[in-house]
Image (cartoon, rainbow, N blue to C red; front, side, top):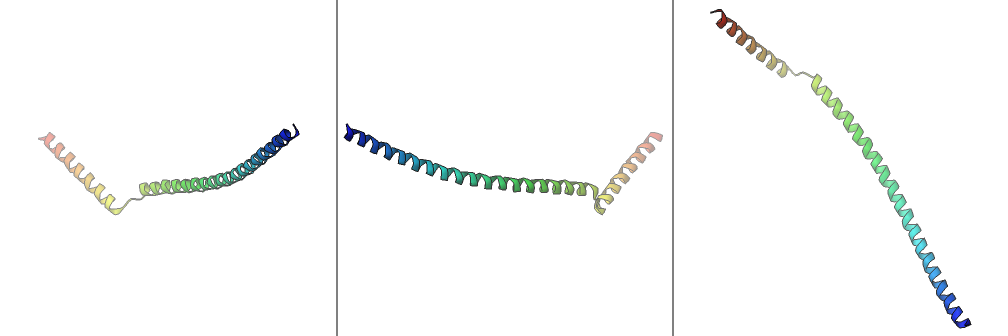
Length: 97
């Protein structure tokens, strides 16, 4: 029985070493994945900041575009108003007749 117990002990030690080796491998992989997760979180933070800055810039651009009036826009608006006034004058003149 002593021989059988030695074989069992050797088998147990071999399996224990294998488990320890697998445990160490999993610890290394876990550490690597934690670092990768941290890097991705930093990247997400940077991209989020960039997105927020771009949204602010877009809003400012939209506001500036709305506020700014070009000379062409002014002249086109004046022409349209003059045309409308002439049409109203014609309508009034037709009603008087």
